[in-house]
Image (tube, rainbow, N blue to C red; front, top):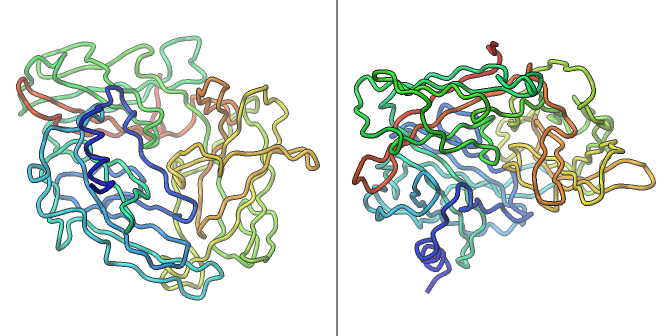
Length: 416
């Protein structure tokens, strides 16, 4: 029995009943720069309209040109395994090798760049809406990494507006998402039980608000205008740097050094929690691969070692510091944990990253494992954040959760 089959059997026999317990598997150190999106998106969390293509790209830095395979699985709203069989939600076949790859050209760091497009000759397309996971396996039947994505149909209209917190205690620090779901041509049966929502801030599943029921039902509209249940910590604008030129200091880079590869030493950051809010444009945690004087950045952009430094004298016993963003799928792992350097008096870590423009944020993990995103960056109601609302519907007697609508809003238009 292969590991892939064992993995599927475990999911069926031991379903997980809370959101997020079917976790994405983060890649090993030799897999870098995973970009995952639809045709109209720059997001690392693809939310695709049914029929829209899906694109996955990544680099393998071990120089082996090894074979990788992909498997697609369908899940319910709460990420429990769907009862649908493969042929019901997938046209064609998965568990196929990724044929498209190229080796790096004229770079200090050798790597192979893999790209996958769905639909393709083997996998004709996705047939059902809902939650999905695509997992990448190596030639030894070992899972390398996995990523979540969603497929929807626009059967309902989802209106999203962003307000300052209605709780006076948090009016300076939180943002509230109001939602109106209009079902002009769609009939809900018992919407209090059959309709489920997921609210995302900056495409981050780790901070998603799930399962909020409609507060009011007025005619053909479901209305969500809660005081605290749909509120997010507002955070702060992301920090950023750009290293499109490896031979010169760029935005956010203090100086460079050439060793086995180029090393970029970023400016030392400090806490912004107690400083006044300052607006500067970001891309909400995302990243873009870019390099000057290169025709094909997929294989000609080089890798650099980026040194992050944070001056933060307020860390309490048991707390841990991390630097994260969409570039590593908001993972909290040993690689991106900052360690205190007693000689320099700052927390440091170094990450191997492809040339580009990157947003990043420093976060604190408490001794009990709780993530505190605003401990270092602060929380300011003026912060520009992107919000998405996903609407799921499982009719009485239905076998799976349909994703019947997606709405989007930005706090750039925030109001009281």
